[in-house]
Image 1 (tube, rainbow, N blue to C red):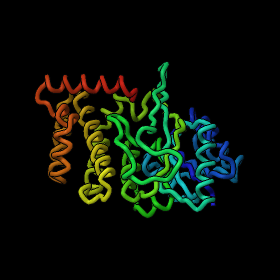
Image 2: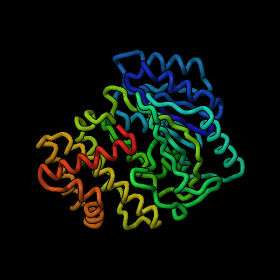
Image 3: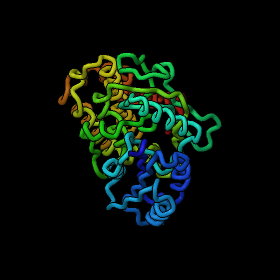
Image 4: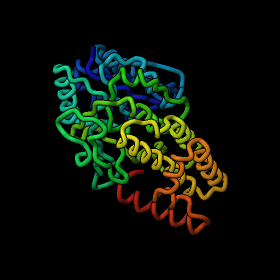
Length: 339
């Protein structure tokens, strides 16, 4: 069995997928790299995937499918995974070699000692185009280091500090046991990928290394603000799935329950601010409908989100209220370096 399976969803990724793949090759025979060509037609992505698979037959698999979107590519990667652990690396991102090898060594040591974990967390870097300072999302103040721990041992994560897809490696069988299946033809499913398995996780491990390089700045990228506004309906679709996914009052760990509440709050805040930034009546109506949906589906969760600081700011009435929300967003953007 391979130690780690790494899925790379690719859609017309010829211009940058090579850098991603090459950054993963130092894992050698301990890893399998699953390149999922998601129906690419505009460039040589399928050809490059096959070429890498032919050159590294013991390490790389190339899988071709009809276009199903990012989520379906992740689903396909998981179906083909044979490794003990599973990681998603987007085709325009890459990993740092030293941190990568440290992660593999740690997973291998834990496995050899019979200490299987459910989720490993590591740091990631916002590699924003043109930015002098690259913001690092690290968790050293929140998680114990050098040992396996449970949710109730974690300390509170700061505002703006979330466990994202870039941060996590899951045990493959746990993802399958959780019934994870991401929706087709939908962006922003990485949030659901991280969120849904949380209650299944019992054993965590944090490695304080800057592993994942999250590139921001490519034109048309899904996290580009104008793109997010254009695809607001998809952001809201994922938001609603997450609202319905778990009744958080039944999550056993108080600290995990609190963190999952916070995750829902920030997701709903992002949906709301993109609607506000659009200055479009139709999208503002979608925002109002989202909050109504939240209230109907789970009144207790809704009240908590609505009375949080972001929830209050995102629902201030009128043009002045929306202007205040935009100022709030701009400050957060400058502080945390996203988009």
